[in-house]
Length: 553
Image 1 (cartoon, rainbow, N blue to C red):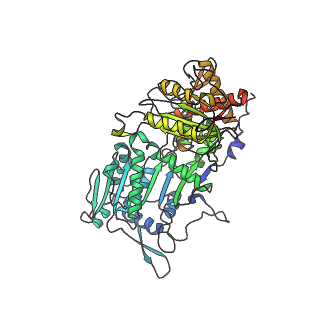
Image 2 (cartoon, rainbow, N blue to C red; image 1 turned 90 degrees about the horizontal axis):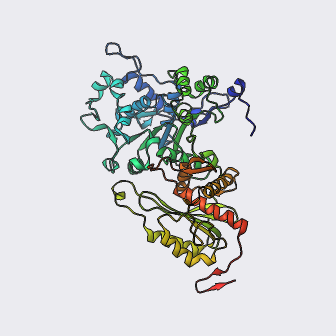
Image 3 (cartoon, rainbow, N blue to C red; image 1 turned 60 degrees about the vertical axis):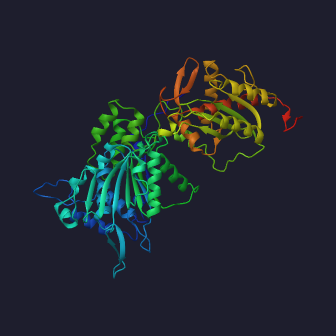
C-alpha cells in the first residue's frame, strides 16, 4: 500500500475544526449570532457584582469576568422565547481537557442557587427581567466523589463576602444553604436512589464520559432526567470527548444529538456545544501548534507547548491524546472499528419482517459473559439483533445466570418467523441446546457448519486459522460497506468494544482484557451469521422447507 504524503503546513492550516451548537454560529456579516431574548446579560452583570474572579485575594477581591466564548455559551443557555420559557431544556458542554468546564459550571450552579436564574417579566423596553428561584435546589452530580470535588472545590473561591451577606449563605463541604435554609446546593455521587424523586431546580452532570452501566451512571442519568421532567427544571452535562463503544451517558447524548441533526429524531430542545479538531489533524508538534489555538477557544491559559510535550512523550496512547487535547471522538488504536467505520453503515429504515431469508449467528455465555443471537438478511446483508441477554448491574446481577429457556424460545421463534438458511453457533457451554436445534432444524438449512459434529455447531476455539480468516472476511464486508445495520445501540456497543488480536494467520478479535466488562458477544454472533452467509453464497443449496406439519419442496 502506498504511503500517504504528510500534510504541509498550509494544508494543516486549512483544516477547520468541527463546530457544534449555536455558540459558534455567525450571521451574514461574520459576527457572532446571539439570541434575541436571553437572561444571560443580567446574569453576567450579577456575577461581576457578587462573584470573585481570577486573581482575587482576601485583601483585594476581583470581580468574575466571563471570556467571550463563555459569555456566548451563557447567553444561549439562558435564551428564552417570547413567553419567557427557556429555549433549551437540557445541554451538553464538551471541551478539551483543561478548558475550564468546572469553574464555568460552578458559576452557573451559583447563579441557579441564589442568582437571577428565572424569567420574571418584561421591562418597559421589552427586555426580559430575571429573578432568583424562590426554592432553589441545585445538585452537582457525578459517579465518584472526586468528580463532584472538581466543581464544588471552586465554590469557596467564587463566593464573595458580599454574596454571603446578601443571601445568608451557610457553607458546608457537600451542602451549602441560603435564605435561612430555603435554598440548597449539594454534591451527590453514585447512588441514583439518593436523588430519585427530589424536587431539584437545576442539576449539573459532571464528566458524563465516565457515566457507564457498571458504575450506575445510566441509572443516575435516567433518574435526573425523570426529576427534571417532573419539576419542569433543567440539567447541564459537562464532558470530555468520550470513548466510543463504552455506552457512556456522554455517548448516548451525542448519539441523540446526531439523530436530531440527521432528521431521524424530534428536536427536544437540547443544547449541544463542542469544538473538535479536524479528523485529519496529525499528532506532530508542527500541526499541534496550528490546531490547538483553534480549538481551545478563549482558554488561553492552556499552554500549547505543554500539551505538545504531553502528546509526544508517548506516555499515553495517541487515541487518548486526541480525546483529551483535540476533543476528538476516537477509539483506541487496537479497536477493530471506530465510529467512522460502523456508523456509516447505519440505515434507520431497515426492518426485518416475517418471511425474510436470513442466516443466524449465536454466541452463548452462562454468567458473566453475555449471550447473543444475530440475524443477517440474505438479500442485502443487513444485520439485526434478535436477542441479547446480559448480566444486570448491581445486586440484581449477584447470582444471575443466562435464562436459557428464553434463549431457546428466541431461537425457535426465529425459525418460525423467518426462512433461516444457515445457523452457526459457538458450541461453548451450549452443546446440548445446539444439538437439539440441529436435530430439529438441521435438514431445513441450506448450508451446514464445517466446524462441528452437526449442522449448527461452530467451535470458535477449535481452529484458530478458520476463525481468523472468518473474522477477516467480516472486516472486509464492513470496511467495503457491504454490510448494513439498523443502528441498534447494543450491537454498536459490542462492535466498538472488539479489540484487534494479531496471530500467525491474520487479525482476529477479543475483549479488551479477560476480565473486562466491555462485552463483544454480539460481535461474535455477527461474525458467525456472516460466515454462514458467506458459505451460503459460496456453496448453499436448495433444501426442503419445513412447515408446521411437514415438508414441501
